Length: 355
Figure 1 (cartoon, one colour):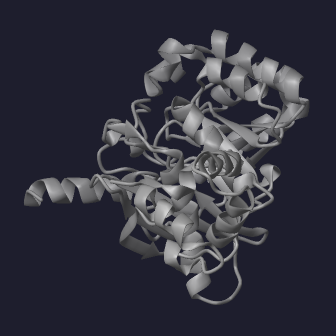
Figure 2 (cartoon, helix red, strand yellow):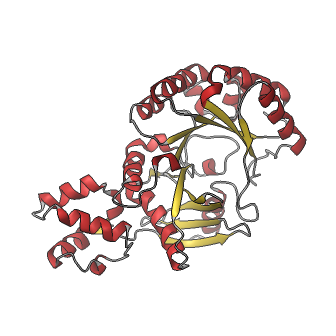
Figure 3 (cartoon, helix red, strand yellow):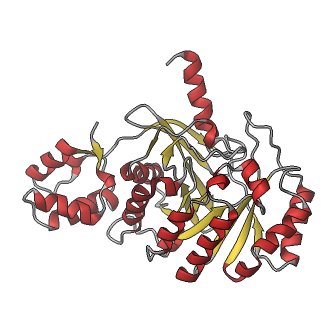
């Protein structure tokens, strides 16, 4: 299996070509063909000499992902199930908003974080994705948009798919440098959001990266007892470790942070939890807001979506206590909406058929 060419940042590609006797400008040519003209074969790079083409073909692949399933929702959301070279499958989602086309990417094959309500964790992590496999998700979605010939482009990215991005930190960072590069896709850093379940050490590291990329924290509970019950990561990084890391991030970057809070009926959706959450975030209210997320039920879990009245009461309580918050707009509710749900169904189907 050849490595994906998308895994190299511009500087890495430049160095790689220089080490093999090619001129520096070759990297700019190749990069332009990949990200501006978006070719699918090295042989289509018609201003790159044959020796360089041969070198690239011998060492890299442009296409390492194949589309197994493509589900389209009535609201324009498209969920892709991609097969990797080793046979594993991952999910990627295109969401359409008034401000542009946003893609949710996956960073790992499976997930070990173990959130008890999440479809992504139904299948344990088998490996990290390479930076190239993460970038190629964006490129495959962009190719699908290109086929419609309406000049739509991927404008926003959320790293919120299957896996914990900060558990695949180095590959995630290379991915960010590739998609943010002004020479390529040029997706603005402020149009990119990374979500973490709360790996405190990596939050400190991310604060020191000097990036304009947005950070979201999957919080989902306002106290350690409840958070540990629904998110086992809280055993390693309880609120006493997580909140100081967030304070450091806010002080270092002065950037607003999002706290994600999934609404689970009769679990974490009471007014009392809303008051606790408001207290927990009271000293961060000027640089944070809470994203209340209606739950998409998963067959393998017993959790149910909170009643609309409970969500509104929770929202009102936060607002009355000075906490900025929104109720997330839903996308793709008529397809496998929950993150990881399509992949889980497909893997189980293959296991039953013995394929």
